[in-house]
Image 1 (cartoon, helix red, strand yellow):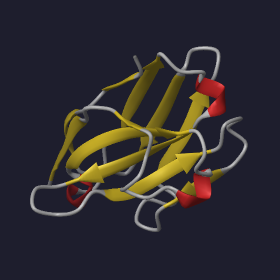
Image 2: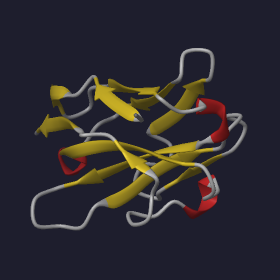
Image 3: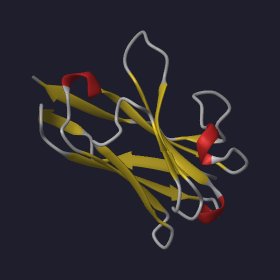
Image 4: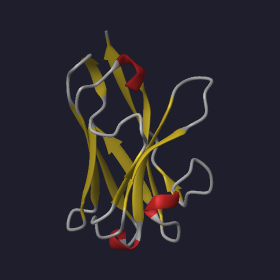
Amino acid sequence: QVQLGESGGGLVQAGDSLRLSCAASGLTFNTYAMGWFRQVPEKEREFVVAISRRGDNTNYADSVKGRFTISRDNTKNTVYLQMNSLKPEDTAVYYCAADRDKPYSHFAPHGMDYWGKGTLVTVSS
């Protein structure tokens, strides 16, 4: 059974940093592109960032470019999201996602193979 487990969310102030982790199990991790999405109430889930299977290519949403960094450790079956210079508009539930066939450049909120349950990030002003 495939499981994606996010951790690292919390309450921070604007300008602070936070690092999210997503530990994967039940799949051959290095055959999956990985990504992060986020969602706020009454809005659609939105793409944040994705990383290729080997970790050598990334794709960022414009809203987080220069502030967020995705990385992965295929020896630990874990993907990370380092979030710096956080803004109140970054407040959301952050979800980890995995897809075996979809390239990192084509991640979208629908049709992903697997999702985590999410971790809440709250940024106060």
